[in-house]
Image (cartoon, rainbow, N blue to C red; front, top):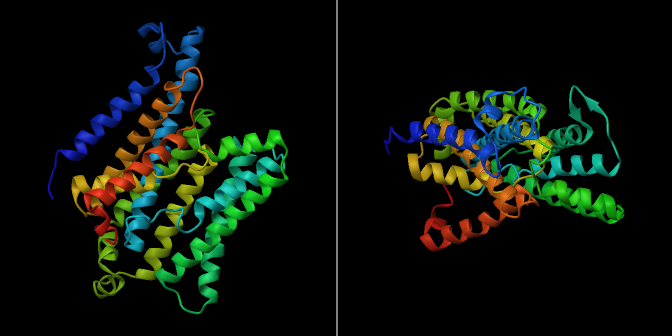
Length: 331
């Protein structure tokens, strides 16, 4: 499916959305405030110190989530696979919840205790899943999937236990963080996510041919000279680190990694050398649009962006079922 205009169009839309989103919901803002970043007015402060970094953080987070989902779906050959499948998101959520519950408030190089706990939780969860599969004596994608689901449920049960032991104030903080949001975004979040998003996209684009072969099955990939085990381990590690960075910065945000890659495949076909940049652009644009809606729909209150993506996820699955695409869930 050759549509050479799709990628440039996605790029233009992404630029328009990212630069236009900070203006939405602001009243009485002039261009002089926008171009004069040193202005002391509250509108200038709101625009440059809150709205702009929030849009950039949302774009980078959405891009990482979409790329992670795309990679997991290729490796597992299933359009419903995401980092949630291996328990990476659940492990990151558990790490963040424990940091909040224990009152860990340190900051290292601008990284908060909650972010550090979430990132460590994601890595430890991935290591634990691989250890379980290795302990069975036979490594396979099916065993990896089953181990990930088991670990995900275990982490979810521990999160519920932490909720039960917390007081009302901590429960409120835990619930708000677990809904996912960009309300506390600043330029530290942009700096934290930028290397993961850019390097992750570059690496996944470099392995685009290998991803195409993995989709056809391990036997065919091996016959074409792909080191399946090494490639799979590397890609799972990269995407898990990306997912952990997003959860550490924004909290768990679901469904982006499912919906965006599916939409990109409908637009561009199955070639990952085009799907990787498309998912990067569309994933970031999608999350910025969702966050803009979340902060304006109930103004002056804000709805966590994770709630908006979850609300869109239900109709998306219904559309898959009614349109007959559910029959193509196995890639």
